[in-house]
Length: 165
Image (tube, rainbow, N blue to C red):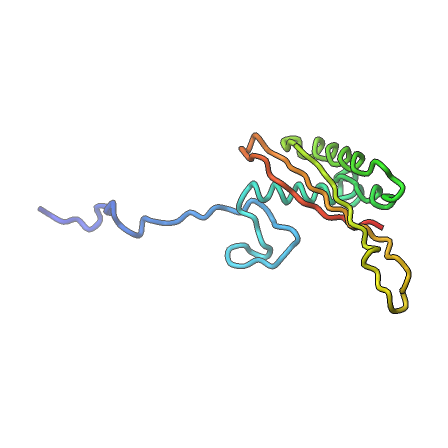
C-alpha cells in the first residue's frame, strides 16, 4: 500500500479543532477600558445583558440628551425637580417610562413598577457651617420587572436610582 503525503488531512487532526468566539453584542455602559478580546471598551457578549443595559440607558436619558434624536428617553428629570409638589410622581414616572419603551423598545413588555423614596435630610450634619440646613435631596429607587418574549427572556428585574432636588 502506497502512502501519499498530499492526500488530505486525517479526521482526528488537532489542527482542525478551533474554538469560535462569540462576537460582542454591544458596548457596556458606563464606559470602561476593555481587556483581552474586548478592544478599547468593555463589551457585552450576551444579548440579554445588552438589552438590560439599553433599557436602563433609555430610562435614564432625558429629552435633548441624545444627539440627533431629541425625543429619545423617558425624560424623568422634569418630574424629579418638583417631586415634593407632586402627589402622583409614581404614576407620571410610570407613564413616561411606558411611553419611552413603547416608542423605542416595543419588544419589551413592562410587567411591574414601584418606587421607594428616601429623604436625605435625615442624614444632615448637626455640626459645622451647614448645621440645621437640610440637604433637600431625595433618592428614589425605581424597581421594574420586564420580559422579552421574542428573545425568550422571562421576567427580569431592573433597579434604577435617581437623586432629586
